[in-house]
Each structure stands twice: as structure tokens, then as C-alpha cells.
Image 1 (cartoon, one colour):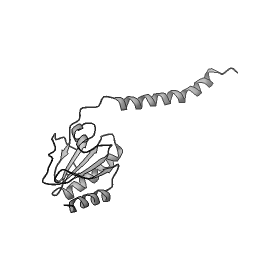
Image 2: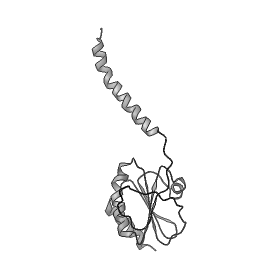
Image 3: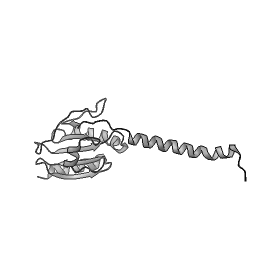
Image 4: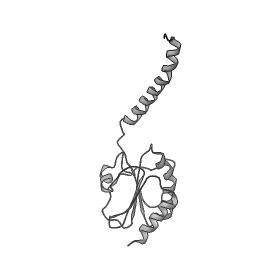
Length: 155
């Protein structure tokens, strides 16, 4: 059976498109990661024009307040969905809890310290520096509020 050039071209176009899309996706995933800085937001956070301003810091082993640590990445859709929720909680709990927001692309010491697995991940740490709770994946307002309330009730 002899195939025409047009027939072969019609069959090849979808394959070429898929290969191109796959190559583009792999290139963006394997692209060099920018050196990121630990991002820290303490006390009440108002919703700024640019999210998560960078403030390098090291975390003390003990704090005068419990700590809410969120690991996120800029390309993570669930992380972006959680952003306004975290801002709202920081406004509500900012006088009782320190909020630390860390870019998971960096912050290697903190990732080890807080047993980072994937983003978004929220780690709740008591005043003495012990991890009280770890929440993985997207967490809604009610779930995070309940976890914060539970942490604040425990001694």
C-alpha cells in the first residue's frame, strides 16, 4: 500500500505537536532554579501588591510565640490558592502566632528542620520549638483555623 505524502503528514502532525509540548514542559521543569531566599512574615500580614516580600532570617529554636511555617513554590497552584487564606489567618492570629512563609525551592536548612515533604506544607511549631502538627496539600480556611486553635490550646 502506497501512502501519499499528505496522509503521512496528517498522521505526523499530532506526534510532532506532542513531542514539542513534551519538550517544552521538560525544559521548563529542568530549567535552572533561581537561588531563593527564606521568606519570613511576622505578626499581621496585610495583602501586599507583591506577595511574600523577602526577609532572610534564621529560625530560633525557641520563640515567644508559636510558629506557623508554610512551604510553598511560585508555580504551585494549591499554594497560590492558600495565599489569601494565610494572609487572612495572619491578620487574625498575628499577635499570637509568628507566620513564616518559605519558598521550598530554597530554605534547605528549614526543610530539614521542619521535615519538609512537598508543597504546600504547613508545619505548626510550639513555643519550645517542637512540631505540633504538619498539614500536607491544600488546606482551607476552616482546616487551618482549627489546627491553629488546637495548637494554641495545648500547653
